[in-house]
Picture (cartoon, helix red, strand yellow):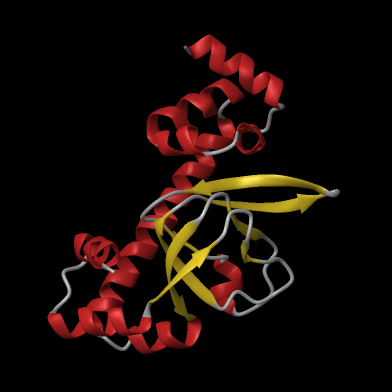
Length: 187
């Protein structure tokens, strides 16, 4: 639980009482390689903090899966609209390797939000994620495939190191063969 508490304290310093309730409500879980963490067509009832592992967010488009992002250690994941609005998810999250997480249920999140320091952390984290999402949308969409790969290499090297080539290719919108050519031109 140290990783989670440290992560939160980097955004918002918690007092001892708030740290204790965070430890009480977040539960450690392990997902096996290829196991679905969040499934489409179901309501996402938890938010997860990745202690260790690799998680791919994707959806199906005409029976083919399309990777939307790949998450690594010390990141929060959830199907945002499904979790916050408690409606069915349109996306899937899959462990790409054995992945250990700390999970927080929707009901327990509501309890934690009654603690002012956790609520401040929550707001700061949401503001940062919304800002990064907006920035990413504008930058990544305008880039060509080589620029996208270079961006991942510089900003998210752990994705390049840990993820399968087919998932990286899907994320940047190219075939595996094109990704191989891009990688060869950069090296």
